[in-house]
Image (tube, rainbow, N blue to C red; front, side, top):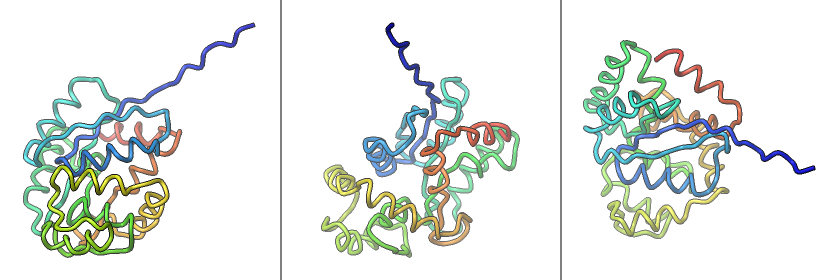
Amino acid sequence: MSRRPTIKYEIPICIICEGSEEYDYLSRLKELNLWDEIYRVDLVDAKGNGNLPARYQDKYQNGMYELVLVFCDTDKPPYTRYTEIKDKINRFHGSDEASSKVVVFGNPCTMQIIIEHWGDYKLKSPAKGSNANLIAECTGIWDYSAKTEQRRALMSKINKENYLLMLQRIGKLSSDDNEPNSTNFDYVMNCLSSPDAAWVDDINSIL
């Protein structure tokens, strides 16, 4: 008797990235097959934080995804643009809790997450010039300014081993987006690594 083919149940999730650095980083993690096969993760480059609310609303309303997330920087206090993004998402859903469930952040920037692949570092600024020496020390990429070739070289240095170390390190950081050097990235990564998709329903119950 022939065996019945295995039917893979995929939960479609969209992550809207603030820009090229976030998009390339998640693309690299996706290449490494770090997430459970139950999820189908599609990535979108919003090409700027000002486009995030509209892109989020569009992807949420088109009904193609069971969950839509936003991945962005907080930048530096008073977090004006970041707060606007959260406020627009909250107003769209009519819930003050919505943005806290769907916005994945790095404070002060995504590099705070990426740099933790190589050590326990705390960035003081989102400015690329301020972090260039540290990036060079960790990766050998000099004068990093997020140009295409530099991003490609940076992402090529990310592997499963330093990914797991990064998760351990950021797990010790605060998840309060008002605090310097904080992130909730580890929560989403751990959820995507689990075949238990109850977290998707939990988030949608609030939206």
